[in-house]
Amino acid sequence: MVENDDHLKLFLISESIMSYTIAAQTRTAVGKGSSRRLRHAGKVPAVIYGAGKEPISIEFEHKNIINIQANEDFYSSDITIVLEGDKEVKVRVQALQRHAFKPQVEHVDFTFA
Image (cartoon, rainbow, N blue to C red; front, side, top):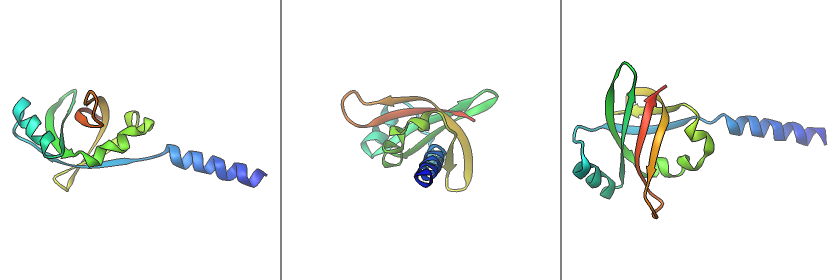
């Protein structure tokens, strides 16, 4: 019986320590029109900002976030965003906007971790 309890504790500890990585590209076109075009193409517009640093406008595939955003620890843990395939940025979710009735993420605000 003790052996099963140890296995359960180990499972809970490993399950609670998850790391998330999202591949993204920087974007130069900002505004309502360009954001709509991104959403129609299956992408999510986002921004990374924080004190003392310039904001970075990014975009990433919707499929990369739709499943991981359902986890509770996604909102409280550090997330790694890989920009253009080579630069890694540690961030936290500040705000996430969802569509009113579709299972779709519309925009994400990240802050530098």
